[in-house]
Length: 90
Image (cartoon, rainbow, N blue to C red; front, side, top):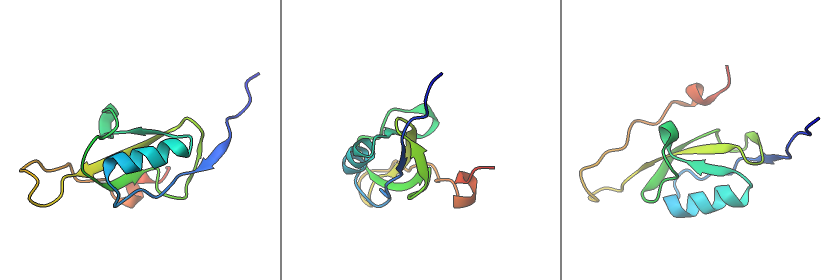
């Protein structure tokens, strides 16, 4: 019988650079990822995350990070991050 993994609080990384955000998520025992199964973001500013900050997650769970390049950093635009209600469990 397998035991449950320890529960940790999801850190708030919205507004941070992608590399710093990923480091903080990893230090919390969680795995940073990009949206739709992409690898963790390497650049940009985190504009949204799921699960939201202060939510409980089991160690090893994924935290999805949506990033966007800053103004004047190119013409790429990030997809619109989900609304907070879309991040809440059903």
